[in-house]
Amino acid sequence: MEAEVVGSDVETLRWKDDHLEMIDQRVLPARFEYISYDSAASVADGIRSMVVRGAPAIGCAAAYGVALEALRLRDMSLKAFRDGMEEAFEVLAGSRPTAMNLFWALERMRVRMDAESVSGPAEIAEKLLQEAHEVVAEDIRINRTLGTFGVDLLPDGARVLTHCNAGALATAGHGTALGVIRSAVESGKKISVIADETRPFLQGARLTAWEMVQARIPVTLISDNMAGHLMSRGEIDAVVVGTDRVAANGDVVNKIGTYMVAVLARRHEIPFYVTCPLSTVDLGVSDGSAIPIEERAADEVTGYRDYQWAAPGVSVRNPAFDVTPAELVTALITEKGVVEQPSKDRVAALFSS
Ligand code: MRU
Image 1 (cartoon, rainbow, N blue to C red):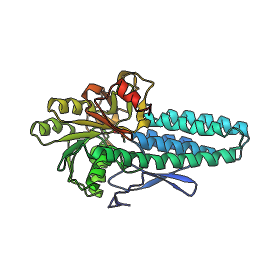
Image 2 (image 1 turned 180 degrees about the vertical axis):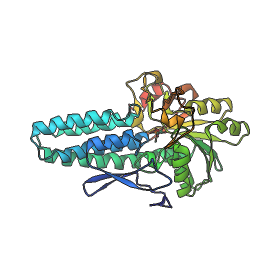
Image 3 (image 1 turned 135 degrees about the vertical axis):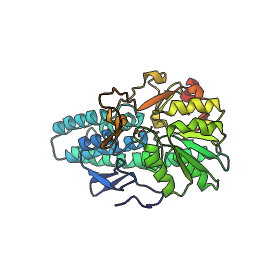
Image 4 (image 1 turned 120 degrees about the vertical axis):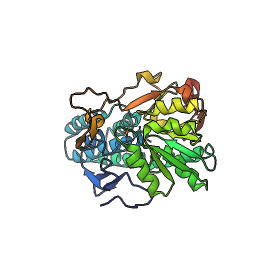
């Protein structure tokens, strides 16, 4: 199917007839297709190969991966079921290393599984599926709440730069960074989006641009190296991005290039906002330098899909994320409210109420 208008309620993942279906984000916007999944290993593969991507969507996919495996093993002995489930948790945890939501979702599923210790595999599987559905429903609710908190930060008429895709496609729905923009538009504000292309995987050009066109929100695509120029000309009023993991001190890990945008925003006194569901916060790491940064394959940098433009034999670096120090962040936008100038105490306070 061609990726024509499907409305703004993109269903990134959906449960259908005992299977998980996920939009294949590798082929958007040329094609709009779902791929079907029936095991933890296949879901882990879908996460690794970026059929599904974006921290919250990865978490939702992992939750379904656990449930699918439980359903697959439900007729086994309790011992074989438990062994199989351990393998499922392991394979899912190894799919991508940076997104906190992956580990958050796996922990939540484990707690649910352990709470059913006296039940048999079939009952546990049923409970795990319910939990996965709840993770997805909760994600959409959180994004809507977070979006509402973000609305007041964007003036009417704002031209908002975003990097990568933190939209409906990166979540169960509505989006985080693009969720704030969607919520602002729903509130009656005129907002236009400047989408960084987001080298090397082009999430901005392919996914953010597609989502905004679908939602009929004005969007202008730029290559990543144009942001500074536009800022210096006064053509950007705010930056809103998502995050894969926020450290206890408020340092933000997000798609490679985000740090560059944050430095530019500070230089030009443009507010730099990070949308951050609490499931993305890792209180276990004191600062951003301790967060694992995924290194991806060289061919993402040397070319795109089958076409390679770089000189053969050149050595390549491909870190998929970078760290933006908390001092460059104007505010975190969370489902518990807006945290200005994030710090250790302010991040901790989010979890104490
Ligand atoms: O490599 P990706 O496409 O998974 O990276 C996604 C991002 O960097 C997003 O900004 C982040 O996951 C937040 S999505 C709400």
